[in-house]
Image (cartoon, rainbow, N blue to C red):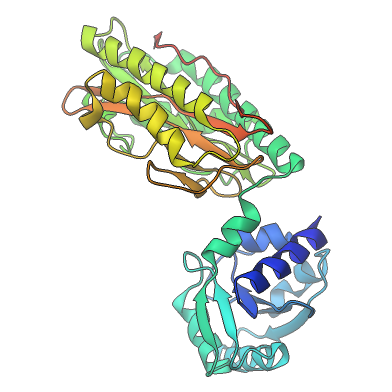
Length: 367
């Protein structure tokens, strides 16, 4: 599997006019090598040149982990003395023949520290973004990846279901978030979850990215819960909205509108259609109901090894959808000072349409 990914990377780099790729720790490095390193004060870099054994620059304490990878590397090892770091980069850059070459980087991940060492080791190299190349490599998930994502969705859904008994008037947002985190771990989530749960009640539910507070839930509140689990390195990302007691008439109405928008968005994706069509399908429902001004974000984003990755589901995105692409559909309506509704599901493009990975009930549940 990893050999196939590296082979596809070689072809994509050549098609993009890139001579090499450098990566530091992150999802792309995991995808290509299976190696999990965390970013720290020490620099880590893999240099990949098509047709060559990849070079790996890393500290001495990580050598055992690197040698356990199914991928064979030429190792360039340094000690904890920072005076040795530059020499390791210079030796690796020379061995890879980077000087004077066009080298791809991952702009959202590569740090200035590693970039400066690379520039010193290959002063005549040109470093350009390889974001589009890596997106092309990772966007379409294989069956094993999709299976992992289904499991991550199942874990997330079990975790929320186990949390519902503690949600009632008088409990705080922070207490609900703590219980949800505990239940996600009990349900089997990786400790490194995609993100900390969003638990937002009452007026706070009108803020799409609210942080849990010590505000207590009261009768009549809407409660937006946005949560996810990690499993086998892959992410799920879901949102459901609940009512604490009797729902205000207009809030109940926008819950029905958002549900219809979610349904339209989940049905809209199919191979060959632009990604933006998913956004437009969901947004049209909300605009026709008169709430277009209160839907303030794109309808979704790609999902996989990262909680947010390509493809991004905004209306102007012309990227053609393809089987295996996975993304969220999360329309919302947010009435400032009153409350909001968001319903989010995880979707995969199939051979002839799209399918939801998630099936947790979407209707407004009164707690």
